[in-house]
Length: 144
Image 1 (spheres, rainbow, N blue to C red):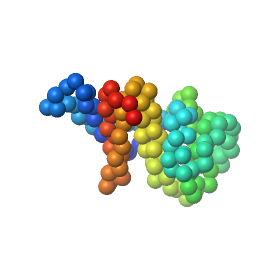
Image 2 (image 1 turned 30 degrees about the vertical axis):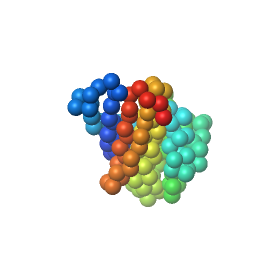
Image 3 (image 1 turned 60 degrees about the vertical axis):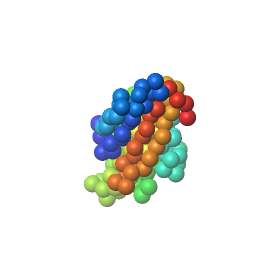
Image 4 (image 1 turned 135 degrees about the vertical axis):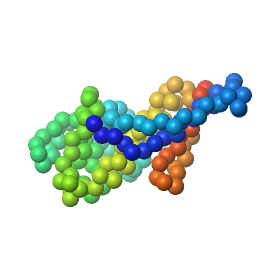
């Protein structure tokens, strides 16, 4: 399982609560790529080719899943959406830098959180942070 190093701030401000009772939580998210729509949104966000479903050839063999082509990677990363497992050959970063995979996982996590929050009828606001993390603000009850 891959773990994203990104930490997202999720803030909930229900309209019916006074400001002093509003909740704030910092949540660390383990990222398993299972949602094709969120993966597509992450690729679009990073200006990558859309992911491709099917069998993909890696150096070590063939694997089936959702293939994402990362910048300067010799082979794509393939995600089994049923299990969340990721397959890739980057030859100890000679064939692709881990930072590019981390960027994709962060974008996927943000896009998945936004999709789920909006599906539940909440507003979502996004703020990039100086350290490269992304702060998401989820307002319960508002749609945006």
